[in-house]
Image (cartoon, rainbow, N blue to C red; front, side, top):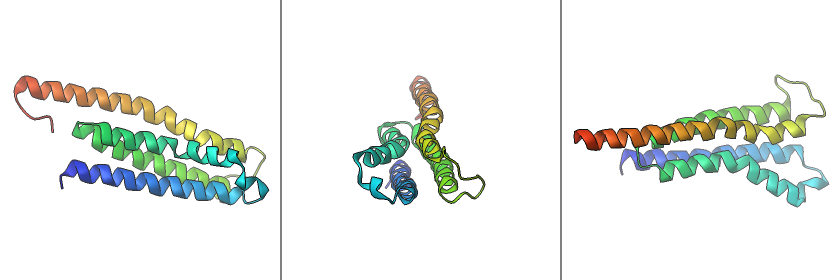
Length: 141
């Protein structure tokens, strides 16, 4: 097994872990009758979308920089998301208010704001390293 395969699998495993922990915290807050609504299922998909983008980048990226960068971004986005969802659920550092639900909606948006441009830079870096490796006759790995 190559190191790229290991990084890809680790990225996928972390995506599942972070998405499940965020979904569990989201559904913990909505344990009343609204929990079975289709809106909650859509909200759960929205919660998992930044992690899905990173897994896609890890599996579609050919360069080692893209694969490892996707893993690093997964760790950052997942740690931020899990801590933010936990704080909004249990209020370690924040006060409970009426905007908790809307804040949970904007956490994936803020993750996308960071992840998508970072992935664009990673893919550009990977392409540049690949071309540089072809021009000098070396491997870009």
